[in-house]
Length: 156
Ligand code: 5CA
Image (tube, rainbow, N blue to C red; front, top):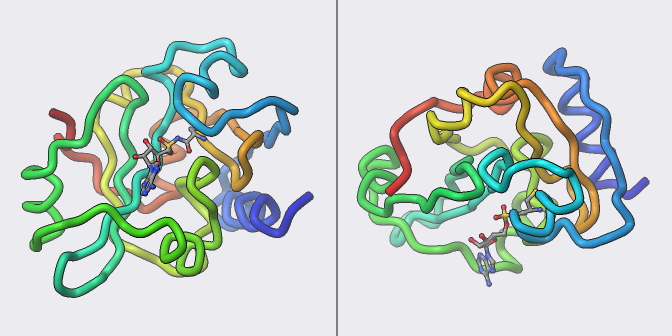
């Protein structure tokens, strides 16, 4: 297993979240790809979107249901500053995950985390596990607790 996947497994264990990380052997880079591989609705895929403060460069993690779009104004209000999409290399350096494999848990650094409240309605959700073909499923409330996410209205 890659170090990135190991970090996800370690973070889950530390949070008391029991997960089964699966390497699908096919791309799970996008929510659509992941839903195809997991055999679930796209809405049940947790997108892990990293934004940064326009001036501060602080990173923020937004966990968004696969069919929803992050509302920029709501996200900025929660962060308390104007946000811009983070640069892929900066994301990799600071989180330890490449885009397409960014997990909700196991980042190199802690960052304020906010979660789309529509996720909690599902019995199970699927999220990236640190690689382009790695995913895990979890009960959403338990996952969001492990991610230390503030559950909020963040979708458009
Ligand atoms: N593995 C899947 C879900 S399990 C996954 O990681 N999906 S994702 O939505 O969390 O990650 C892809 C997201 O990365 C895209 O929705 C997009 O918001 C973001 N992204 C894609 N390209 C870039 C880029 N060049 N710079 C910053 N963010 C990007």
